[in-house]
Image (cartoon, rainbow, N blue to C red):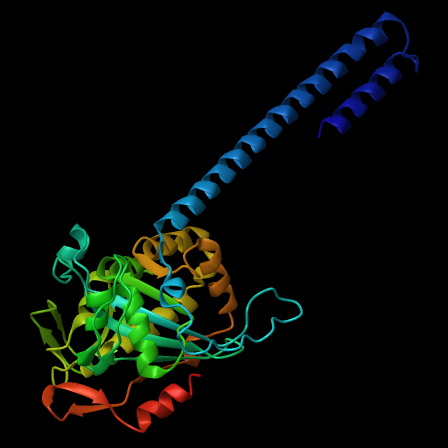
Length: 370
């Protein structure tokens, strides 16, 4: 904008002076132009310094955010603890020519623990302060190509052969027969949970992910809540949830209560609760898809902070870079392509309060995931 104004002034001076621009007047007229250029240079320099400052602050903030989120994650070296005596890995499909993202089939054991570690978990009704149990267990199978997935829920009351598991402190847990499935986590933590699932399924768990009560509630809140539809009234004093049949938008605390409800639905068994948990999983996936989460950096950060703050993974996923790579590889997986099923079970013949895998249906299900 400065150039046209200066050009107009010089033309006007030449007309007034008969077209001659020499002598002292010309010299004096040059001084304001120099001042303008100097002022413009100073202004540009100030703008440049300001932009540089913004970029430095932005890079610092981004670096801090990455460091903060990365530091939130707890890693467990499951592969090293279990060694080679495991089911074979699923052969990875080659990446696409235009993508550096993995594309092979993947099996992930996802556990929700009822740990009472920390004030927030205690307030939300976690387990005893001496330890925790796997309150929810799901094997997430992602098909080769990563455009569809199957989520298999394992009832925690399922009786299984629990193998001997290595302990962090040295030594091994005792093997047990007809043990409740969720006891594996209680006696041997994530390592024993993975080993027990692999013993039950003969399917290699490529990754392990665990989130506690507090983390689940924060995740739902960060998503803005979830919308679910219940087909019957829920009146459960133990989970502190009271809902009439119908559609409800739940915050994190009430979504967690729904995930924990068992006495207010069906026959009061874990099977009724699993149906509610599967409904919540689909609702959360639909919320992510419908709200364009990946296109909202501020909201995405809040979700990432909520997730990583209460997350335990195997060492193959215990960094933000590894989690991001996994998430990017799933960008072609819509919520409607996620199938939820429950391990086929029947009432245990020697304990009416427990269940055992129903054969041959259970074996056929696991075979489909290999």
